Length: 274
Image (cartoon, rainbow, N blue to C red; front, side):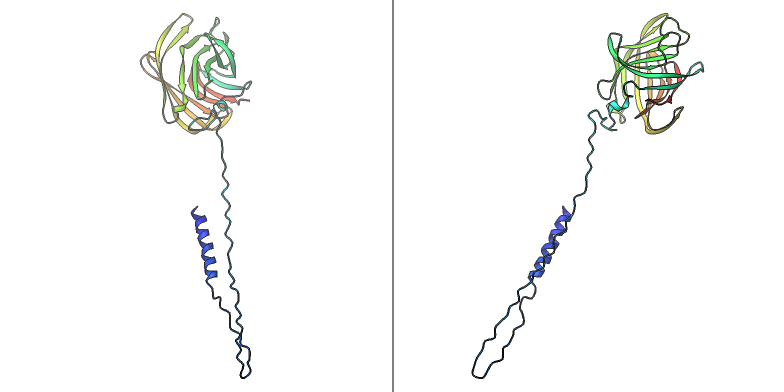
């Protein structure tokens, strides 16, 4: 607005100066004869006013981007875009705590009945006795709120079912809307089911962002930017101490790397989700 005002002032000033120019023309004298008095005709030249047209300034082009309805309040990423599309598969290279390295197929299944509810399920490997595999049950229906119901762990050594099941009577809720400014925290009770019996223990969870723009190198290649998260677990579940695991998440490739997750010391993407 200030620039337009200045242009207006310049136009008015030029117009005013033109109107105030010398508007008297030179007098013309006609010869007269003796005894006759002749009044010379006066010729008046019309004043010419020059007006400079105002400069036209084009308004700057403004690009408006509309965030998706499920966008994160800070990073702007769509919640739906975080997860691979339905039917997508990938391969993860895992290293067990026994030092065995395997490539396991991965998929996300929807509408799975488990423990009295209907859940989505992330599967790595074949979740059946005699296989190295995990199955994580969760709810992602509310944008940026991740609810975990439980996890089943299978190993090659077990022949009658999961080696261990960890589950929550009420789902463990992580509200990621508070990230990255605050850590997510939760206090809960976790039930462990083992071939020889089960028990319920107190557990505390804290999830914090280490970085949002890391590059990580895995079997499938280099991925950037990734969100590097650290999860610290405590309570009776850890014998009164704490234990930490780490994850690297990519906006198009979901989980690209993790350490110390359930049956696996290291987990990394081997072939991309597609």
